[in-house]
Image (tube, one colour):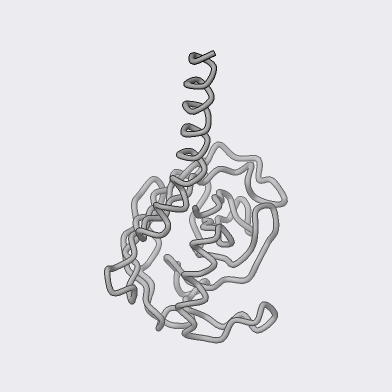
Length: 174
């Protein structure tokens, strides 16, 4: 009887650790997304890929990020963002990660230029980068709302290209 009891504890501990690990990472200010074409609604037929990693500052006023992407040839990156929406749903842009002026320009003027693929873009964003999404109840500068959505899995990062204007690669931030 004892081996079954021990096995049961191991299962409970493993399930609890697996469920709480992402929540603990978000609580500690670490965020990540794996970007693939299959996460874009509608799906983009591409071999592209990417990652998004971010770390919230200790005073919770700044997020430092690293966005890496490889788009399918002959794709040209146009812009990259964080959007507000649950998995499988398109939502409004809340933060620009990079831009490709003059055609695709961050209205805040604060994000770096998107380099050609393959590449890595690094940067930071604060409340000054948060764009209003009035249809979703977000006012410009609502950094706390952005963090709440990121911590709860209701944001995604994506990279738009000339191949797939709505987004070539996407990943839910967790």
